[in-house]
Length: 180
Ligand SMILES: CC(C)(COP(=O)(O)OP(=O)(O)OC[C@H]1O[C@@H](n2cnc3c(N)ncnc32)[C@H](O)[C@@H]1OP(=O)(O)O)[C@@H](O)C(=O)NCCC(=O)NCCS
Image 1: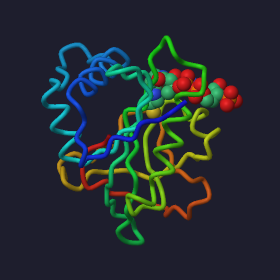
Image 2: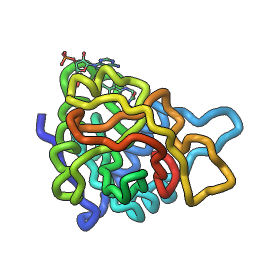
Image 3: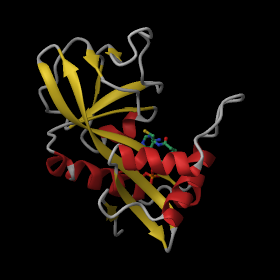
């Protein structure tokens, strides 16, 4: 399936952003008592972090999506640029036909254009990513920009890197920002 790449300099069209926002909120509904970012807040966040979006869709309707952006993390071996993969989702009516794999592969293929050799991300579906050549990592993650909170800034069940063969450092990793 053709994957459309929407780069920051192109800007995410509002209709595409609205469709993605609706899909993501349907798949990850807000916890009771918590608010979700409005469409304008989501668009502003994607713009601010210079997300590159990988989309399979139909007119302005997003049916499969992944995004990736640059994040410099701090490891015990020094600073490391990673491709931060996030918001990987396929419309429930279109799963099981390879579209999730297509958008994630396209995002991983984009890593050199981000100046990164490795992607770091959280997930609850590690087997899906292992099939694509990723592997689990077990570092302690913190957000040094929020030193009062020593909890893992990621909230999903596991963290992974791609490619599996990357020489990933041991020890604490400072995400230098919130989880994604
Ligand atoms: C996970 C998700 C993106 C997969 O999308 P999809 O289009 O159905 O997956 P694909 O058809 O591309 O599957 C590719 C391969 O991964 C496997 N796979 C798909 N979902 C899987 C899962 N949850 N667990 C294990 N393997 C999975 C498929 O069986 C297929 O294997 P094959 O190559 O041996 O046939 C989709 O189910 C989804 O949107 N889930 C809800 C949101 C989510 O969990 N996103 C990931 C957040 S990190």
